[in-house]
Each structure stands twice: as C-alpha cells, then as structure tokens.
Length: 278
Image (cartoon, rainbow, N blue to C red; front, top):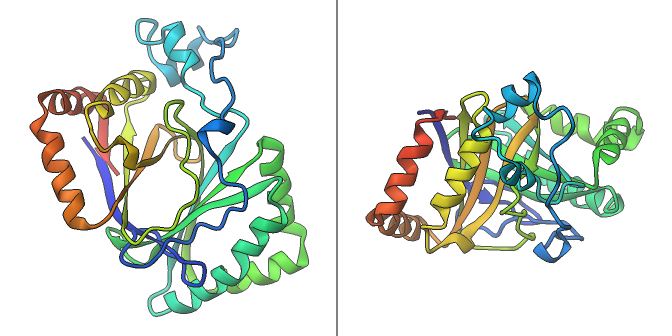
C-alpha cells in the first residue's frame, strides 16, 4: 500500500503556509462553505453507468450499487482545485509575501466564481511545498478563471512574479466526498495533516464505502476538514486533511484509534484496494 503523509501549516493572511505549525492558517474565503449550503446529494446513476468506462472508474457491479453511486457526489455544483508549488530554496518568505498580497484580493474580487479555501506550507514531508485549495462555483467558473489567468494583464503580471520563485507546479481537479463537505475556513494555531492515497483502478467506490465505515470508528471525526477524490489530473487518488492542536495531540488521537479493533480492521480492508500512500 502506498500513502502520502505530510504535516502542513495553514498560512496566516500575511504569511501563507500548509502543514500548520504554531502560525495561524491563511484561510481567506469571504464565502466559506458550510454543510447547510450543501444541496441534496442523492443522484441517479447516468445512463452509461453500466458501460466499460463506468467499470473502469467505479469497479464491478457488485460494488457499484445504486445506493453507493448516489452517495458519491457531495455539493456537486462545486469544483475544487489543488495547486502545489515547489518554492525555490531561500525564496519562501518573498513567495509568501507575494501570495498574501495577491490571492486574498483575487478571491474576494471573484468570490461569486472562486474562493480560496486555504493555503498551507509543509512542515514535514516534501519541504518548501505550498498547497493552495480553491473552490469554484462550477465547471464554467473553472474555465472562466483559467481564461482570466491567460488573458488578464494584471493577473499575469502578479502571477509571473510569483512563478519566478517557484521551481515546479502541479494541479488537480478534485470532488468532495459526499459525507465530508469541505470545512469552512478557520484560523488555528495547530497543524494540519494531509494524507493522499493511490487507489487501484476500478476500486474507488469500494474504497469510499470502507473508508466511510472506518472513520466512524474515530472519536475525533470532527477534526476531518476535507476529503476529495481526483477527477482531472492524476486519477485514482484520494486526499483528506485532518486538523490537530499539536503533534502531541495527533499522536494521542492515533493511539486511541488503533486501540479500537474496528478501526484496525477497516484500515486492513482499505489497504487491500490501495496501491500506496503518495
């Protein structure tokens, strides 16, 4: 099984970061999403859901039950984009300053189309990485924002300055899991843990069902701040973010989770359909 683990720090408004340490997170959305905003998520499978593509994405008929399919999508009208920047060594302070000056204003100006869910810097894992999570009002909004990025002179000027401090960039369009709408932006003094998994092709719905059961075993479910699966970009990936007051609290929380036999069994069941932690 392959998994990705990193500790993030949420960036404050004047100093963005992902794996949160003792700094406050930079969550600058003016229209935070709440569970109350989530529409009815039950949907009927599409007409071609029994075809080859459906089998490839969702798995075999035994797993691809109508009930499971109806629970895949959360706030289906929303799209999320995860953008990762590898910042050049020694340039983090300047990078964070530029991002803090530009991203909040851009998000506020176009809040009806896009909002910044959070920006994080890595404390443990792939160092010098900064992760930004954007929420779009729909596919049309994604396309419109991409057009602005290509054609708006002011945007291009500011982004060019930011990108001059970046070694590599990557992005991925993801969808919320139905039972875990993205948490509203908050400020904390703790850390965030980002976990990413590569799921075997055709096993996503099976993984989702088993993972949903497994998290019910955890008493700290309220600390789960978001969970997504990839739609465009690198496929067959799932990501989830957990918030903790400190590394010590994370250790204690995981210790108690493993004392629960149901949790241990659920982890074993999901590992059979997972390639690895990214």
